Structure formats: C-alpha cells, structure tokens
Image (tube, rainbow, N blue to C red; front, side, top):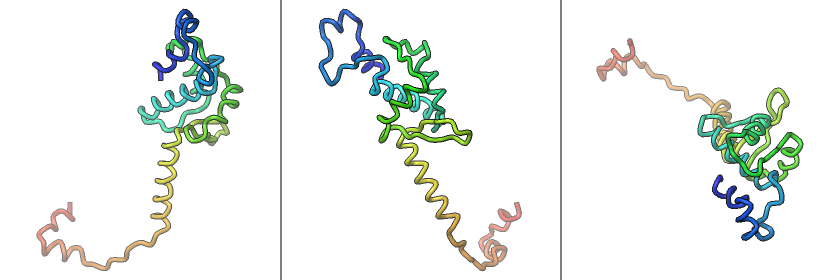
Length: 150
C-alpha cells in the first residue's frame, strides 16, 4: 500500500516531470481510491491483531495519524468517509454497531462470519442424536473405566 501511495504522490520534482495520466492521477489526498486503500490497510492491521470490526471513528483517527507520514496528508472526516463509502462494496462492509455508530469490516471477514453463523445456527436447530448405551459397561470391557471416573 505504501509503495503505491508514494508512486501516486511522489515528490513534487518527480511529479512535475512524470505526471500520472488520467484516469490514474489522483486530484486530492482524499481521493476515494486512496481513502479506500488506507481503510483496507488499517482493517488488515486490525485483523492481524484479532479485530474483525473497526469503528469508523477509529479508522479516521488512524488515517489522520501523523505517524503514517502521508504526503499529502489524508484529512478525512466523517463526512468524507460517508461519501467514500459508496466505493467500498466488494471490499469493505458497513456495519452498524449496537450503539448506532458506524463500523467497517473487510468483506472477506464478513463473508466468513456469515458462514460461521449459518453453520452454528443450523447445528442449534438440528436434532440431537439419541444414543442409548451403557457407557460404564462399554468402557469397563475396554479397560478405560478409569478415564470416565477421572
């Protein structure tokens, strides 16, 4: 992500001599493609730390963080993020948290969560197996009654 960001926004002397042609050229630090890429990068970092969902306000703060050393800076805010969200489908899912706040999730993690929920719900609704067995007797004949007692 950082290599491509520096390629799109090189130093001024390089950009003057070798400008990016349309439609690749970005007109501002808050171009929707750049904001989407930064959001994906932040969500990937969060996912590698075990977080599959990130509140919008946290994503905004991380994009604006000075330690990213973005040039030009990506001065996103809630309004800009709301506009850019129309470019998220297929990559980033919008999620409403219990408190009503907006959050983001990588599309692949959303699909995985949906798959897990469906499997678990099917198991919950499924019928239990009815097994009538004298387990003490069965274990005693195999010499494993001690494992049951422990």
